[in-house]
Amino acid sequence: MNLLELGWNADWQRGFNQLASPELAPARVISVLKDHYRLRMETGEVLAKLSGRYSFEVGTRSELPAVGDWVAVEDIGANRAIIHHVLPRRTKVSRKAAGRELEEQVIAANVDTVFIISALTHEFNVRRIERYLALVWDSGAQPVIVLNKADMATDIAATTAELEFVAPGVSVHVMSATEGFGLDSLQGYLTPGQTVAFVGSSGVGKSTILNRLLGQELQPTLPVREHDDRGRHTTTSRQLFALSNGGMVIDTPGMRELQLWEVDDGLASAFDDIEEMATGCRYRDCAHKSEPGCAVRGAVDSGLLAQARLENFFKLQAEQKFLDRKLDVQVDQSEKSRIKKLCNNAREASRRKRTTSM
Ligand code: GDP
Ligand code: ZN
Image (cartoon, rainbow, N blue to C red; front, side, top):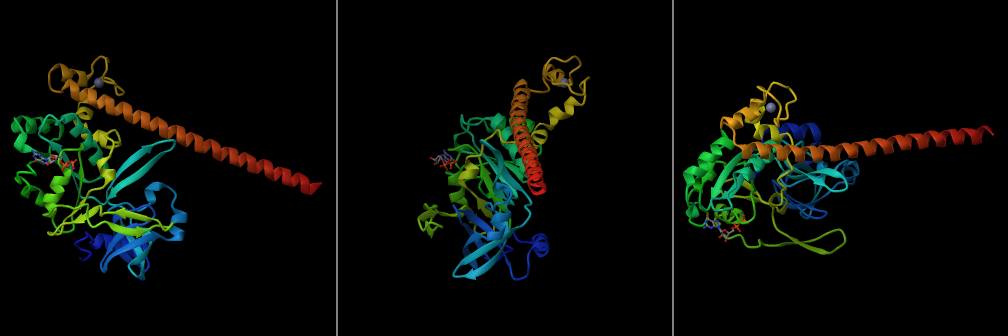
């Protein structure tokens, strides 16, 4: 497999030339293991580790290589390599891990298209698709809506009409993975060098679609046994799949577990109709609750905007505020500890001065 098939192009080469020395080679991350990375290079697959220097310099979790990343490596032979740089990402699907610390974690990098997969059964939920859309817009990748299980659908036309409102301009593809129809229409996104990732609830048919695209049953694929640092064995399979026609699909547990509330700037693009209506509100900071002269409420009253869509917008807004607050608190705390450290240093310095002058 050559680099072009992996998605390499002149832009990547330019980025690489700026960052890396000529003795390093480009490689793409195809899976992330505990302490290792499985990479694909021009010469084949290798198992890699971060260089000591890179791991030392990594400031945040988001700087660690993710599936889909392009990295600059040193080939050390015996199918092993050392990662020295991660090339700046073109797109990234990330989540904000809200634990004690709010940290960005990149789930997949350099994805061109994200298939938002949904089933045309009672599972279908236009609000959920709306939220996935916000997440995809935020990543920089292009969203495409895939409606699977068409063989079980009752009214496809009504469903697609509903989507026209929430996802204007977004392509919608209707298919059945088990019956095998509609799959061809997805091939257009999987041309050589193109990377596609899947999102969607469990059970909508993601694995079945991937198997169909791969043209064979995906075994719990040839588990690769590897030694990690502590000499234990870990078993993994690939997370970036190369299709025979040259396209690639990223399917990882992380992508499957993406939390829906993890949206950021995507909020505005997913609800730009509401943002647009809001420009007609009397007050600039109108909350569209009960303010006089509110154009958004006006649109609801006249039937132009669904009440449910407005409520979904409020809900996402509230979640976003919660996340922002968490971030603020964190920034605040690190600022406090910085000041504390400065004070300690100053105290220490003056103490030392006193002892030396004595
Ligand atoms: P995943 O959790 O999204 O990976 O979903 P799976 O691919 O495991 O599919 C869940 C179930 O839905 C399986 O029993 C599939 O056989 C079934 N399924 C997948 N695609 C279709 C389809 O197009 N039509 C019907 N009727 N069933 C499907
Ligand atoms: Zn308003």
